[in-house]
Image (cartoon, rainbow, N blue to C red; front, side, top):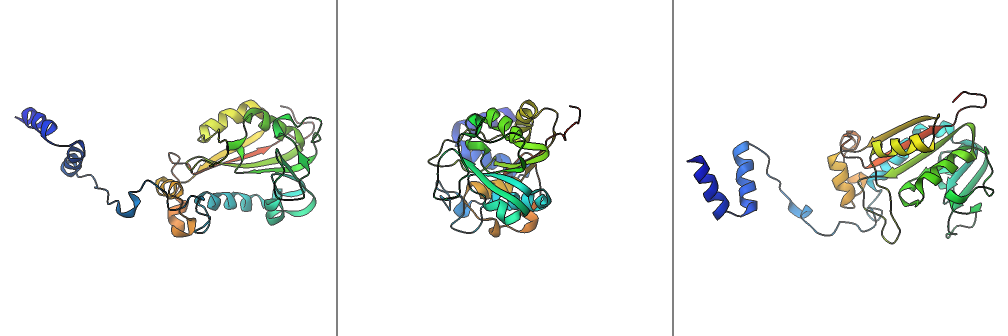
Length: 246
């Protein structure tokens, strides 16, 4: 009888109705979409026009937690904005980019993956790569050169988006979870002290994809961490000190 009823239901009812009935029978929650049932996000600009993008919440926390390391000679990809915001006792605030943007103080105009002979070896105390790893085409080459330019004992602080919208108008190559970045880092940064973490949860990821601002979520909602839904992945790398065995 149950089999016959199941066959009748599959013949007579739409797939959506079948799912609804199945959820009702199993005590599963029914979604109430409201204005979330949409084909366009609330913002086409990652939420900047509404407030601060979701991924920036985790980025700023990461930089704030490591501000004591942003000191001395610091290199930052694109422009040295975060260096100036979080750095202290700065000797140099240099920058590198593959194209010259609207800022005037670009130090190195070069592809990081091909920067040998341009950016000096073992020169910087800290290299900041905020939210840019996803758009670097030769990612392993870039990671190797990032390590090359940092002095022994120096650090690389990098962040990259996972479950966020892709960068419209730009090539966007790498949206990996923590495991993927751990695999890449093991190849590019052997022998280093590397710590890779993911940040976010289901709600934060949905909000990021819809272009909402982090101010529209509660602190508790943002800080709940579920590795299955990484909004941002953070990468810490400390180069072995001079004389340290690898």
